[in-house]
Image (cartoon, rainbow, N blue to C red; front, side):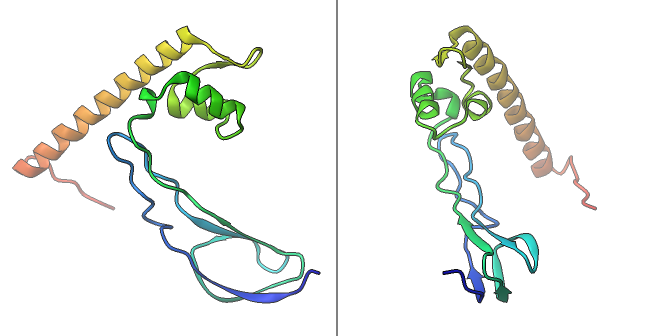
Length: 148
């Protein structure tokens, strides 16, 4: 039976998701989504008393925990198993883990994976070096950052 009603939300970890350790990525933030005939589709965190109509959908999307270890250090075969199990998409395997999967036979393309990981690690190392120099310059007073 579908009934109209009212809702409140006190979701946590919406603006500060769990951080990764040892090079692991930050989790995605928790969020609520109301697909409503009254309000339209809205995302929410904390919200005061709000009406909803019969048939509206309220979902809570949890972000999980932060990662442990750099994702490019993960065994490509383990990433493949996660793709096969439906936990990770082929696109996410490529983007987040640097693992190229051949969609025709669902195997790891070793040469593309090596290339992806080499290129993306180089970009990450370059970014890390830039952040280090920026932090040092700020500390020494040689860099001022203006906001706005």
